[in-house]
Amino acid sequence: MSSPEPNASSLRAAWAALAILCAAYLLSVFDRQIISLVIGEIKRDLSLDDFQSSLVLGSAFAVTYILFGLPSGYLVDRFGSRRVIMTGVAIWSFSSAATAFVDSFWGVMLCRAGVGMGEAALMPAAYSLIAGTFPRHRVGLAMSIFVFGAPVGAGLSLLIGGPALDFALRVGPVHVALAGTIHPWQMVMISTAVPGVLLIALASRLPGRVALAAATSPATVAAITPDAAPQPDAGHFRTHLWLYLRIFLGYGLGGLVGATTSLWAPQYMIRSLHWSATDVGLVYGTINLVGASGIHLVTGVVLDMLAKRGSTNAPVSVYLAMVVLGLPFSFLLFSTASSVLFVVALIAVSMLVKPSMAFGSLAVQSITPSSLRGRAAGGYSTAVALLAYGTGPALVGYLTEHVFRDGAKLGAALTIVLTSANLLVLVLLLSLLRPIARHALSVPRHEG
Image (cartoon, rainbow, N blue to C red; front, side, top):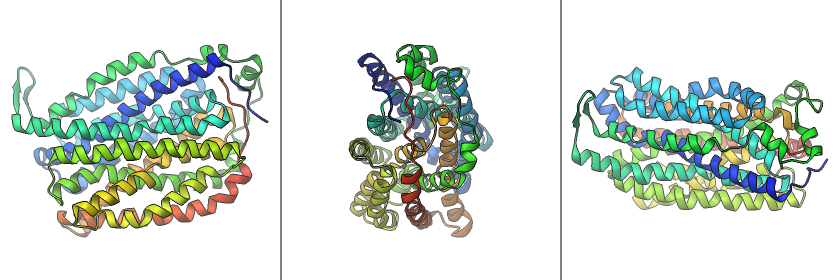
């Protein structure tokens, strides 16, 4: 069945909510990414090896992100997005800043776990809200604008964090009464707390269940309110389990390429290419802000055009073409000693392979009934976290520390992990082309 046409006021409310969600995603990625710049300083001050550093970068975050991903989806379905997002922002902002006040490997791991727990709340809430508030032919653009926050957040964390770290390094440790000596990397982490307070105030303006329902026609409310319509049984997930697993694995491995590149590239640039933190921030930050951000908007428009023409597998076919184009660059990226070739490959990978989240979320939402979207989004976010943050960065650290036993082999470890992941993505996406087209649902979009 076709979705009800939204009225102007509900559509304006949807765009306003999207703006707040974008700000939330931007800050979450900023707090998640900033540690990739200072991990070298943390490694030195806390005497960590590469494998421990990889656990701090990815696994500590991923474990709680995974554990709280599905419960967050249930909370979204039960209480709505606003309260879930506000709570999540408070938890991850506090945890990110608290990293500055610990002095051991396990202390940093605990703080990163707190960041993961807080950020686990955002994605299910945002995916559910976007899929529900926008009509079908605008969901692709809205989702792409939302995930636009990822490269912007990553870019700003580098553009701001790189020069900030170099400045703090020039200033050196500062002695603060009651707090003791504050090292440069600690100054950077403490500064992440302030934006979180402002974001909580913004998130309080997100519409709740009652406000959203009030902005919608009675027919739409009846279609999406739990007490007003029969709910699809969770047996839907059992029936389509293999389809969901392939989506989660395929796009999750795409996320692995993106997350592993984002978290390890700054250290590779500093360690192997001998760049300063400021140079890393300016180059990689600009790539994220301009190239990676732009491709999200372009693909959003393309997906919506294909949806209008009746395509039901565009999230698979478009991303498949992008991965094919990006594969040779993912091999070149960390295997070249040329800074110029590295930058060219980094631009290509950032634009072609990294934007997996929006495509995967659209694929999931297209086959999921409206009342189960929160749980489906929670499951998808969990799978992506497991592969992208729990597996990718740790594999690189393990290869460097325990297989090659040489920190100078960071590039070789990254090349092995990224190329292998991309090949698996190609196989899985090819297997999804027909099933997605066959099982895509035309379900009602609630709240406008």
